[in-house]
Length: 238
Image 1 (cartoon, helix red, strand yellow):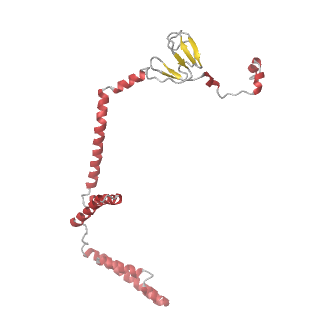
Image 2 (image 1 turned 180 degrees about the vertical axis):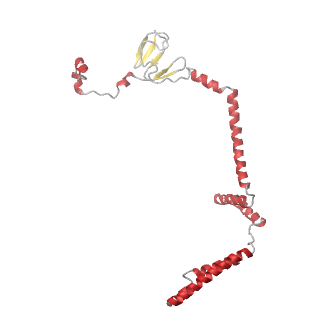
């Protein structure tokens, strides 16, 4: 223990209102006053002496030396080889401390920069070949042509006929009803189901639909069955 630290500890004890001298002097107020003033003066003198001693006595020898660092490194190796997840985590903490304390000031930052650069190199190794392959195969132009092609076009509802008397593939060719929502072309006998949808010869897919969906959910009051056309047209007049 350093001399300055010992003097500071003595001064702290003297300033403590619960020390033995204060407790013994509590029986008399005048005695307590003298003891308290003497302790405060002594504590002040000890602190002043401790400050002077700090500038004289040599700095304490550090416990961090090559031997202690080597022992700590061996402990980290033993923790890492134990197979215990908690001990491995402690080994990682020790490694970080060794890098911070035993290495030069910029060693930890340099190692992190090295790991970041390694990650960037790995990303380039996986990403660059894909970009080069896409450029060689002109995949960007291919994607644009596919967007223009009708073979992959997906129709939305009402973009194609829901039901008609002529064939959607052969304009003018009559259609024949062969089932519920199923119509057959008179030219090539192909059957179209307007309810479930159909696929055109160019590969375009037309979703199914029904005109009944236009009025689904609508309800009219019961007395409207007695309305006339003239009454309906005049109902909105002021």
